[in-house]
Amino acid sequence: MAQQTLQEPPAATTGRRRLRWRPRSTFGRHALTVVVAMVAVMLVLEFTSPFRNSQLATMSYYAIAAAGLTVLTGVNGQISLGHGALMAVGAYTTGLLLGPDGDGALPLPLIMLVAATVTALVGTVVGAAAARLHGPYLAGATLALAVAVPGLAIYFDHTLGGEQGLRIASPEVPGWFDATIYFLFAHETPSAKYLAYLGWGTLLLVLLLLANLMAGRVGRVWRAVRDDEVAAELAGIRLGRVRVLAFVVSAACAGLAGAVLGVVVRLAAPSGFTIVLSLGLLTAVVVGGLGSLVGALLGSALLVFLPPAVTNLGTAAGLDGTQAAQLAPFVYGVVLVLVMLLAPTGAVGVFTKVWRKR
Amino acid sequence: MSTGMLEMRGLTSAYGAVVAVDEVDLVAAPGRITAVLGANGAGKTTLLRTISGLVRPRAGQVLLDGADLTRARAEEIARAGIAHVPEGRGVITELTVEENLRLGAMLGATRRSTRRGLDQVYEMFPPLAERRRRDAHVLSGGERQMLVIGRALLGGPSVLLLDEPSLGLAPRIVAQIFELLRGLVDEDGMTVLLVEQNARSALSIADVGIVLNLGRVVAREDAATLAADAALRHAYLGF
Image: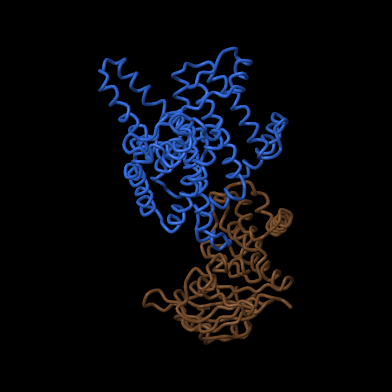
């Protein structure tokens, strides 16, 4: 112990010298990270194939939802098996507002904002009910949401399109965006690439907002409620209100993710929002590292990139197409079990441990 | 006029058929330390939990400066100025020391008043200042006790409820904490309700002593008188 305290000061001073240019405020630091990330995203999107672009677009909406789920499950300790359903709310809202051909619709950012707001409202209702529930009961209640919402789409098939779902117009690439990319990289922007930009821009914005929320008073209170309800209550924290707020923030993210999904997939259909989606998000959050936004990112990357990689390996090893495709969920399950057994803190936990040991 | 007059009238709490606190009438006055003593299962902890709203009373009232808090929720009671430091410390181990303290400072505090409060707590408990950025799980038992007391104080309470602050601590640390309590009461006129098994040291700093047995008040004396009453000591306090 004493030895540790003796060693700390020099480490701190070298750290400070090396990073002298680092912004002082937490917000400044987060904003800088996001700007750097945005540049990295641009380079990646411009120099990878259209197929990778579309995979990255897929990853972006998973990651937005997973980041929201991180707030709820990782930071506030409430489990949700219903985030897929909340994404459906966002996607259907987007579908209804954008329409099948996009004529005369509101501007896309506004539609996405509406989708987030509508989903946040649904989240308020669910959160208010969830605030009184714990553990398996909460899982059960949110599971009901995951089962019921796709059913609603089928019941109101006149407006919501039934099993076929709603076709969603692909937004046009705005002129200024096309011009900027042309200026920087001297080529046109196909629609798929624009959608990847849209998804990642939204994702980085969401991460910036959530990181700030988590670093401040709100995050502290969320974690306190997760770790020790009684102590939090005795410190004057309104448990119910804090839990509902976490649910609302998380639902807004899910709604936004749903909106991005809608325009990327160009469809909002019940089959896209089954319990599998909700469970996928939950496993992504856990495998990546519960409670960490970076973990949410890593988990969603795994969710998107692992299955095709495994399928390719399978084909290369001489399996036929069907067998190779069946290999992916198996490997994903094995990875999940291994992570739980060997690294219950997820990928981020492992990295932190290795980093500290250096 | 100083505030923090805590009054219980016929307070009764029960867990199912077991009555843990039985018609307790008690006044804890500002500027005094009231020690609540008694054996295991006498109802001391339940009494505190009832006051702070963690247990719903079956009958009776809890009043703070005449205002009825009997049916209020725990967080409202905390906001009304009653700080409860629970037994077993209630440290949130996954937050840092400073984050734990800041939780206590949320009740309508400004950035500056929180900073001032934090500085005061760090001055009061230097070991906390050294570890302010560390996770609270690295703290020793005594430091955890300091942390929860510090957190309670940051809310600027008029009443402090302490449940077994000496539990598992070295006598020297207990003496330090008790000395600090005495200072808070004498200088700031705080009301302290101190639940203790360690009757001897509790009575050494208390003004008034209450003895509970099976949920009932069986003795109510000046601390000095109580400490001198050999028969009572043998019967209920074990020293």
